[in-house]
Length: 343
Ligand SMILES: C[S@@+](CC[C@H](N)C(=O)[O-])C[C@H]1O[C@@H](n2cnc3c(N)ncnc32)[C@H](O)[C@@H]1O
Image (cartoon, rainbow, N blue to C red; front, side):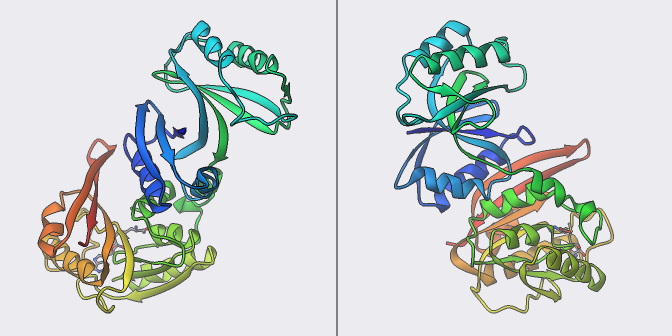
């Protein structure tokens, strides 16, 4: 069955990586069908796919909606109406259920008027014997104009407003240089950490990553070398009722036993500010990667955000590299995301 993930446009690859990590974590079999601007179409098989997608929507940060696909065609009025007219909607609407159609244009795609197509698609579904209800429908159909036209019924919606409420400056303790909560959550998802697992951040700072880990139900452990920042991390974790342990310590000498954490997500200092506590940035990365490898359980993932390339540090520590991708933050800062596996 084809499903569409309506992706946020805030990053080119992070939303896609996040979706695939969550599907893998839920044990779903999937294959990419098509990747359009802000819309990823995935063929998904498995038991209770809709139920698992609803669970995944509770974790995702960089998608808006998950749709069960009715059809895909060119972004032209006649093919769109023809596709809807000829579609069997029994997997989407049951007898007696009401519906609404909402249209969205991704970027500049298609010149079909949104209200016009909502009306025409609504009419097509009406002629199949269903009643529309614009205010309180049982089923919402979404029509996405991207590189192609995609029509689907909503399986789940991501509550993105919560991420705004957790913006760094709205938390009890703020210190500059923090990842935005949506980025932090996407990285937590990419680490495939599950609720009840242990998530570790050896450079926890104000706990931006750990708060997101705590909210998905993980026990989170953070190390921070500066006492004042660690105290701020505690305030932030308390605000969100996280199950956490914080240590004021050095990420190069981690006071944890071998193979005791299920996932690592971390954002080490980039060396731009004075916030490095080590002989050099090279020593800091070299020694902390060795420690990350030591404390991570075999078969698990570490996700590292950095400004420089860290593949060599990862490999030297013993990891194999699963993925590397980048995000341009502004003119002089490009972040690299590196996903490492302990084989
Ligand atoms: C880029 S910030 C992390 C930001 C963090 N993600 C947050 O939400 O605030 C890196 C942090 O690493 C800390 N740090 C620097 N050297 C360290 C070391 N040797 N061991 C542990 N933490 C260290 C810094 O004090 C800083 O708070």
